[in-house]
Every structure is written in C-alpha cells, then in structure tokens.
Length: 535
Ligand code: FAD
Image (cartoon, rainbow, N blue to C red):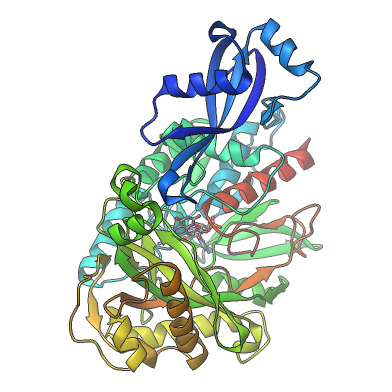
C-alpha cells in the first residue's frame, strides 16, 4: 500500500503498450512538478478508452506520493490542478469477538461467493462458522462436472450450480458490479481475491475478471485460511429442515437426519436451490416472485468482436467485450448478459430432465469465440400464477422442453434458421466452443413467441451497431433461464433477518445480489451485522 502525502490523479492518458516509466512521467506532467518530487505511485483504475478508433488509449487513475513541498504547493494553489484530488486510503474494519460460544456456531448454508465471504469475515472476527455445502469440494467437483460434460451423467448436488464456490466457480469470473459501495466492501472483496491468488491487476482494472482456472485455486486457499481460523466445512451435506422456538431459529436438520443447534442460520443458497426454496416457503418464510430474464446464448468469433471494438489495434489489446440493449416485442427489454470474451458455452443443468446454458472462460480468455446471453425481460405476469415459486416453475418448464428437444444435449441452431423457424443441419463459418454434448434443433420450439420475436428484433438492432452480430451463421444455444433469482426472500433492511429471527437470507438466491462481487459484498454485509449483534 502506498504511503505518505497522497494525491489522486485521474484521466491519465497513456498509449497502448505503455511502460511504468510512462505512468510516472504522465503524472509529473499533469501535476506540473519536478522529476524528483514524486516519491511513489500506484495505479488505482485502468480502462481502455476506445471511443475514437483512431485514438485508442488507456485511461488511468493514479495515486501518487509526493514530497511535502510539492504536496503543499498543489493543495494550497489558488487554482486547483485539473483531475487532481486528495486521497485517503480506508480499510474495512472487522471487529474481533473475544468471547465465543463454540457449541453454537453460526451456520452458513452455501459456499458460493455470498456464503464464502460471510464465512471468511466471521472467521476473521473470531467466530468459527460452519459452512454446509451440498456439493463436493472444488477438486472433486471439477472431476464430477467434467464427467457430466463428457457423458451427460448429472449429479443433482454437484454440478455447475452446486459445490464449493457455488455458481461462480465455472464462470468467466467477471468481477465488475453495478453496486455502488462507499464502505470499502468492494475493495475488501477484490483484495481478498488477490490475497488468495488473483492477479493484483483486478484491484485497478475497470472490468476485472479471474477465470475458472484461477478461481479454483483461490477457493482452495480461502478454505485453508477459514479452516486455520477455526471454521469448518461440511461438504456433501444438505440443509434439509429447521425448527424454531418462540419465533427464533433453534436448530437445523442436515441430510434429513442430523440435528444441529443453531442461533444464526445464514442462507446463501443461490438461485438454483429449488427444493430449499420449497422448504423455506412451506415453513412460512416470506418470499415474493420477481422479474428476471430468459433467452439464448450466442457465439461470435472473438476476432470479429475485438476488431469492432478496437479496429486495427485489436490484436494488441485483451479480448474485447460488448454490451448491447434494444426493445423487443410488447416493449420488453432485450439485452446481452454475462458476456464472456474468449469463452465457452457450458451445459449448466442442476436437475435431471432439464437443460440450460451459461458461459465460462479461463483466465487467458483464449477460446476463439465470444459468447453472451441475449435475454428478454420476463415478469410475474408471464409466470401463469402469482405465488412465490411461480417463476421457478416457469424456468423449470423451459428447461424441461430444452432437455426434451435435444434429448439431454444442448440444442443448437444458426440464427438464420432460427429466423426461418427451421432446424439447423450444420455450421456455417462459426463453430461452437462449448462444454457438453450439442445437437442441432429448432430452438423456437421451446421459447414463448414473445421471447423468440424479441430475440430476432434485438439481434437485428445489435447488427446495426456491431457488424456481423446478426449474421445467419451466428450460433445460438439454449436455454439461458437462470439469469437471476426468480424470487426474493423478505429480510429486514436493518437486521438482515427474515421473518424468523436468526435466519439471514443473503446473496443472489435471496434476491439481494446479481453476480460474484455483489454476492460476496452481501456476504460481507451480513457478517458485519452478525458481528455487530454479538458485540
Ligand atoms: P451460489 O454461488 O449459487 O451458491 C449457492 C451454494 O449454496 C451452492 O454451492 C449450493 O450447492 C449451495 N446450497 C444451496 N442449497 C443448499 C442446501 N439446502 N444445503 C447445502 N448447500 C446448499 N457472475 C459474475 O459476476 N461474473 C461471471 O462471470 C459469472 N459467470 C457465471 C457463469 C456461470 C456458468 C454461472 C452458472 C454463473 C455465473 N455468474 C457470474 C453468476 C454468479 O456465479 C452468481 O451470481 C453467484 O455465484 C451467486 O452467489 P451466491 O453465493 O449468492 O450463490
């Protein structure tokens, strides 16, 4: 961490291929100081500015440590230096709890980002959380998931959605989030990833990403640390019931047989734990249906996307991403979601007889294709009922149709054939890069008309922005049905508890996050609430 008299310099413009010395010199120029007045510097934000194709450059925000003299001169100047502000480094404070009752430890259900970061913060505070995870540890999980992709043999407790690391493990590991957080929780999450093995550049990149390969090592390292702090992992253990006393949680049931006393139950169960949603609903936990989005994955050549974003500089910069939005039929939003540069489309099923897809990548984002979900907004009025689980049934029906359409494989179709409502029989210029068996089919057969037509409209509109986006040989794969939780579990905004005291619904499944970083931040927030209550 940089120390001393600190200032932040923004909008530092640097060419592609710049060196560390270029950064120093650019800061000296902006601050109008002498060469020897800058003592140290650290990049805090870095993004590619590709708005003008003939002037693609990096834009940095840099913290500089200055001599006392230079610092005083700048902050006392009558005219403020443009793009220069005072800088103060703040740390997230995690209070230590000295008196703990080791017999009744906080129980966290789910080891996805929300559960994992909640457990880590609780462990740092001196509490010794128990993490209950229905799936396997990440080493064995990787083998189970690989086997599923090869043979189609699905485990309903260890798969792309379930197991150590949760749904974030087989992912692109994008860490950017729409969530604003003035309390240093986002940097805390990113610094934790770095502490356990991520490249430090995620601390300052505008769109940081980790990748499946690196994420797995991070999970193993975090597990070791949580265990060394006294935490406990219970893999292949399912939370199956709970009981209350006078409105408070009193104990939980694991694997339908083991009873564990419990005063703090943190439910970080993700958006795919449908049987647990059913259990919670049947036990009187209040939840409501919520909108989400449904659609198909699309694959394009990565080179096409990178050329569009960066022009002739495309091969000197990291694989490019995109974000596109349009209006579909009935005024529905249609947009790209979870874009994976240099990625793979993966069969992400978690229930027998159901097929769905998502995207992942490795740290190098080295595959030849870019993929993203092109999804259409759906809301409770589409679900055919208004109970809390109506959205789950809507998803399940789509996934069942998808499974049946391609007999358990991922159904795949070219965009031209999708428009013409006919089966594809072979690839054009783009071939799929996917994990799991694929089979040509007609994806129109599984989707409601308002989704198919919205996708066609959306793709046409995106084609006017990114040349080739709506090519006839663009590959579509289905179905992308688990974009976010189909329900929200009610919790008190102050205490974070559900309508039963001691139960904390957190993360994406509870409807309070969407993505790895926001789920992790929600886990941190819940842990801080629990620590505060214990002090
Ligand atoms: P989850 O990660 O879903 O974890 C929930 C865990 O709870 C699971 O491991 C599950 O087994 C466990 N569990 C559930 N019920 C029980 C029970 N009864 N007993 C025991 N254990 C239980 N987000 C991004 O930000 N960037 C990306 O690049 C990205 N790519 C993705 C790619 C794929 C293929 C997928 C599937 C998702 C991706 N996401 C991405 C979304 C992201 O993974 C989720 O938003 C995030 O993991 C949600 O975190 P969570 O902790 O709330 O829940």
